Length: 483
Image (cartoon, rainbow, N blue to C red; front, side, top):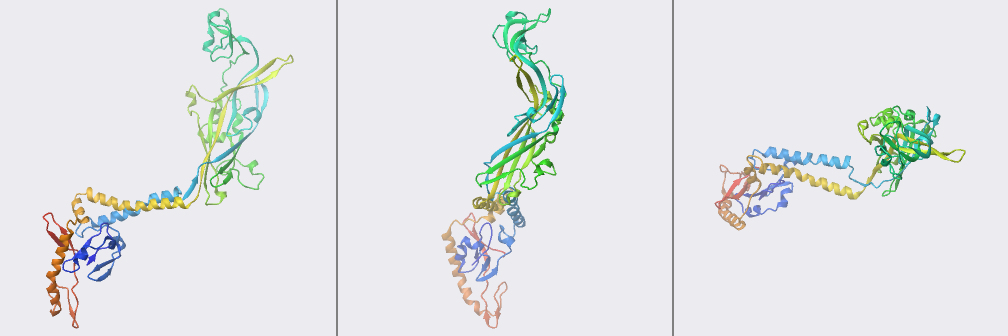
């Protein structure tokens, strides 16, 4: 009895003339991968590794070499990119923690000098142009101003730029009603200049009201040379790991001399002009009407390595409309005032409409550390992909090629009547019994035989493995297999 090892579908081989043919038909499928090929009691080494694990259609099939090559290439190469992606790039052998806890402290430094008609000569330091002076994850740097000095609570004409304040007569200004999007409350009078037919309502407000337009040139253009110190503390609670973006160094002059750049990627001190330029914008142009810049701190820590290798990366983006000059909501500004009292105790103020750049500091990250559970899960998933090669090749050969019927017939053998096959094997054994008994009396090898006589010893003829199958008319066909 014989069997062929290692194929995608186990082939059961039956000798043409043997009393063990029934056993040959009933060889269990587990024997298909034993590594040896048995023929009438003779054990021969198995075929090569290439053939051992490749589907083997009949030798006459023209698809044999193609099937072996396609199966081995698909089974070997197809899982390789996923395995490399999972284990080398995504590090799926690690347990990860994305619940980052973070704290940010920002400090801006720099001074500048201005000389204007409203304010005269003035020196600006961090307390004047940074809101708030002690920043956290958001800080604002003033770059341009509209100043309205010496405002007092009194009655005055509303600005002509307010549509709801326009009037023709006193009845258009009902007293006590506030001006929509205006600066105060109507008093009931319509103020007209000279003989003009149209005027504005008189209001009770901080007078005089703001009437000036935004300067074309930024007042604090030198702010591009200011620096900001960003100190970030982070913690990954799952691994109880803490870190800061400030390098652990004993050089006391490090923070006084370094600035962030290609040569110092871990220095936490940033020049404002450089930050804006890294977003693709020009600081002087942006300083006229303001904008919003995002500073992204990204932590990606591999805790299987030393803690000193866990360092942040910084990314810079402009968050407001890049083409802000074409937008009605362009720039970024707000108003604030400084209050005083004169010698008589009357309160007055200086109103500032501040344009500037808002910096939003955002932090995110993850940490990973080796864990046996994700390792087992991902190894198992990678091994499961090994079966894709055989499935894909079988799918193509059975359903998509012109000779798919030929391959399907060779790959699958249907046994419908096991009892009839057993009777056939028994009948075949009885027919060949007399020939086997007289085999020892033959002095010479017959034509077509494989027995031989040497020194009076007659060797038993090796049985040739065959394949048996049913046809549609119920007949059994037996054909020899080529080994």
